[in-house]
Image (tube, rainbow over all chains, first blue to last red; front, side, top):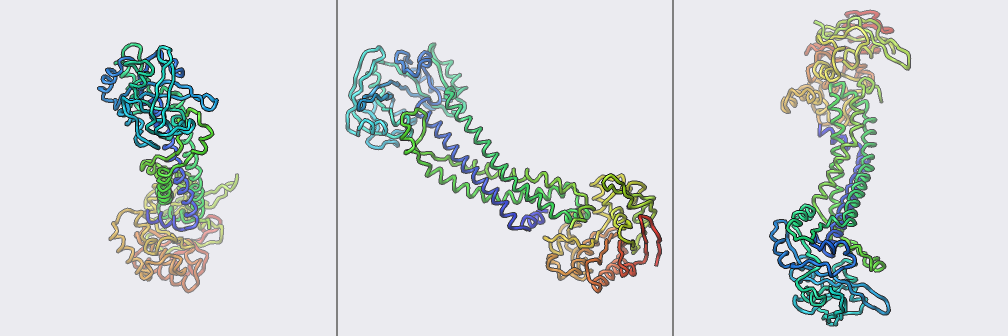
Length: 407
Length: 228
């Protein structure tokens, strides 16, 4: 049966080639888009986690209600002890304290909002990876009045490594305070909303500047399985003192919505592309059945059963689908590898939307995965087989005597 | 001993809203070893009779027995089994599978039978190709053979599974006279040596001349049934 099916596929080489080409192209496009979109979604998630929300944050409940105002009077007290407690949970990978505060800069007569973030540089290396992201200079050291400035912000202020950044802001009690910070390095996380308005300083210096001894605005947590953040946050919440709350990343409606909608929309796009391509197999198999009507009638006369005829047609579609999907997967692998390493650079485009707070990267890279390639290949084969159902049934139901009359 | 029998068999076809009778109450029994020709003009019912003998169709009324099986009671798969196990076919246009070699075409019915392993099948096929005189063409495809050679392959295919009877629909219609003679002589030899029953449909006097039993049919009824 396999030999007969294979030879039937090769019977009309041009037609089989063209049909296979459409399946191969569809598989290649699906793999490429899937790889790219996976990378974008992963990047979006990573940027948001890195830049803002973490997998879980522990916040003062009142702070959460007014977070956009960055209210320094609503804080997380005794954070060191809390971090020790939280890190005892098996699900938690890392917990670190942060202080976020707003600063208004005057640049050539225009007001520019900036975000200062006090961090523990050693712990934050696992989150921000600053040492790999420095454009110039070095990562700030804990316990010093050093600072690292985002590349976009440095460019706007005309700052470079070695300069002094004077920060004047309001403390947690409402009084004015100031600090001179030495710029030891300029970073680029590749996220416009961070690079264009953020500077990092040592947590203890931020506490000193803002008069927040022993307190932070949030505890930033990474867990081992981000998909389980809702459940883990619920568990961690039970260990928190009154007035504090554990917030999973999914609570950020915007990010969660964007990721879900992207998966749904692109899932529909993949299905659409494959259905379109499988129409060529449907057409080819119908033509093959029509051309071989007399032959099918003869095979039935010789004793071939309806199920065997049907399986023969389906096997032909399967062979064509496998061959085409292999070619498509090979091409898709090359494209996926390219987009995962080179990516697409949107730096010039994002210059026009510097102050947008969506965590967009400058360069979008795909997320290469052999699973994506395997799924793309499998979908190509599956849709090819599904497309053969009607022609196979048509062939099986042919009346042998009538079929043999067809020339 | 009868290999196939019709008892008061009727077959009507629907043409639009009209029922057209093709076979009108035929009683006929084909005996083992017969070399019978069913002769008649176009539209007489020859092909319909062959379709009924071949389990490719069911009667509208009456009965058709093949080896004691009443075909009217059989499902499509059971009819396929009967064709597979008991009946060989030789078609007017040879109807070989073009992508298979002569060997593979002859082997095809044995594969459907699922009785023999590859070695046993190979022996049967080569023996049969040798007996029809084309063992050296085993590796050729139909497009690489003449009409006469293709018909020999078709004969081999029909006989390789040792059927109870062989149905041949105008077997010499698409080959020249000389080759047609050779084919008929070959089938006669198979009939004599193997005892295989042959049933032809024909309006070719040459074919009728070879038959040992001549059944004449007109307007769906038997006109005469003579043993020569």
